[in-house]
Image (cartoon, rainbow, N blue to C red; front, top):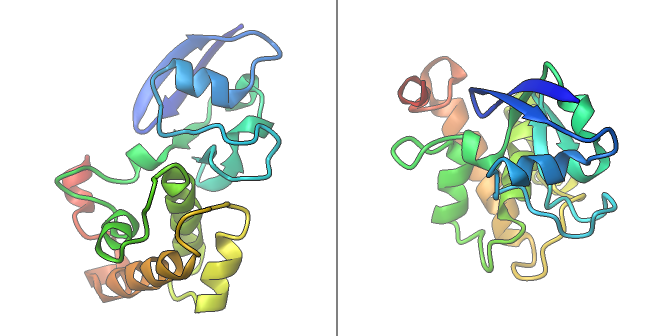
Length: 166
């Protein structure tokens, strides 16, 4: 079947089998920041934003991407203008081996989009579906809260550097 959707701001046209999973199609398209950990929706490594909503791509069929707007961790920001959550993860040491990082940043970005002033408990709940075996989560929660502070200090609550991402 022929699909078209937007991936990190770029229109993509792709062929997919009717039973192909979104995670497989995305990785075939070069979105290697979409990781497959468990393949059963338990680890969160394959997290993406679909029309701004946090989804697990291992549980979606590729056909469900048709006409949608997808954002992976790579689409949150750029090296020159990282998303506040990306910057906070780096500054707060919230990355270790890095395998869970893309999924964690997607879960955190989804939280900050719907709740710009999350508590630490909100942050813990938002990332609860994303497993990490390296950090112990404290630095990840610290990073989410720091990103929230940065976003709340930005004029109009906009992502700093967002104008550079277009």
